[in-house]
Image (cartoon, rainbow, N blue to C red; front, side):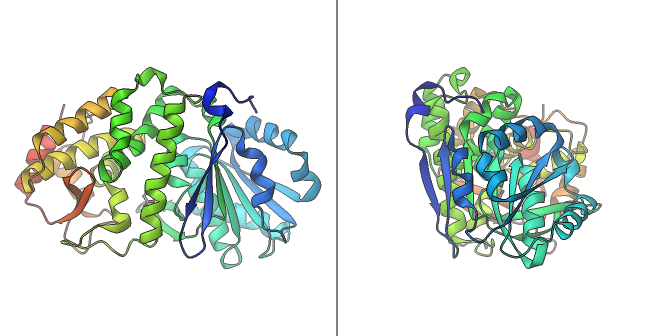
Length: 379
Ligand code: GLY
């Protein structure tokens, strides 16, 4: 692992508690991977590390850096394909076979080392093996640190769509080691910022202020500002899932949409990703989706034009797209939005803002409003 660098790295790690029924900590800092053995259940004898092929080098460095892992535990590496390719029933089945061969018991533990697809697949394997074994997530992308690794959503894809099979299975701990972001390609870091900015619009407007006050080129792995953004976004997510882990709170007219608020911008985003054959980065699609719902809220509700403009300004500032330039037309994207997981029956639902940090559910907006909002984000 690279040595900690910069002033932020000198600071103590920050621990953020996710206060669900089985509370756990998200540790954010530089060089926090050394906390991994302490997070494993005391009775664990076997540890399965789920890691994509492309991170084999990183995994070797982790194992070299912490010989206690291989000395104290029987470690098995479950190598999985890179990215979304890993999220299949076949990969899950290969992992189950490996756990069976190793004699994995309920007191043993899974560790994921990778991006969001790895935490989704590895979390699902942990959720399903013996009806649930402990999992520790070590996210290696910004997107996974601020979203996928926290909150216990796990899943795989099927021919019918993304994440349609899965379980809620919370980790026993999450280690967000910012040093791991040093080798993350810039486009991936920028894509992860979409989820951070989303948290700014739905809950913590200090995120927006911080992005506006920071030179975007200075948002690097060792920057104190990036660390603060990660911590703030994780706190938003921790608070939301603590109140509504299983996403049952949201209803049209409710005070707060609960966990569904985290879906801000995601309904159009999922449709864009699907239409592109998942060739578009999730964060880039979310950025466009956030502007779309802001435009929709200005039409179907009273969202002020300056808040809509702020969406474009903040997202563009960090280098994210705010308009859709793909092949799909409105009808195709609308059809995909109608079968989004968040739809209820035939009623299409969106999380929109009444104002900054005031998310609400909008159920069944008119097609004219949706079309006009889409046209406003069409390149
Ligand atoms: N990624 C949205 C959620 O965890 O609910």
